Image (cartoon, rainbow, N blue to C red; front, side):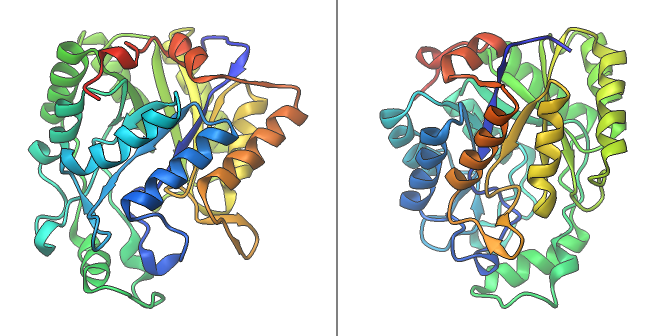
Length: 317
């Protein structure tokens, strides 16, 4: 793993799988998403990872004009790196879920951010398992929850080739390679050997999501050891974890020399039985832990240098 003296903190603001009925603090309106993102930046996040939501109803969308509502305000008030998802579901008009490949490419192609997420294989969203435990606020929440049982967010070889070419090669976008399983690391290695992508690889190892790896310490060690074997010094490692194990797993990443991702996309919780009021609370907590470990926090410009991004001046916002 590429050695750095700074820890990159990413904050994922809202995601697409969490629903408004799950927490009154989940940001869904433009004002809420901007406020949450800026709270994270103030507390030390150098990267803000964004999904878009319908401004009126809060359901996931892929419209570039909605992203611009957030991004233009965030970059006016912070120097954080913007990271746009390519894995976004889309249920505009309560249809088309998951999103088509074209819809998932719309915002990254139009806005050309410094970083995009890049899922290294299919993902089966598992919120359908919660359908009998939720008190829905909107009809779309029920539709999305029940529909997820028969949905896969596809990432085929053909779609990954398009992400690599149209976003990476043509627009100079760096990627956050999201790996939900060990096999995703081998797919990343395959794409590198094909020449579609180039190092350094910013690998986000993901734990605790249904259908992926659990949050066992042994899984985290295995993921790291596998990445070391495949990529040597050509990657930057980070960890995120869903739900209650967010802080445990990200702290373990830091102890092992990695970077961290927190935020309300990944966990709605601050502590046991206590909902986080914003992503900034989670960033503040992990930053405090990092400092107790005598680790330094990367500024946005330091993160840009570590990850080799093209810089904000070369984006379309």
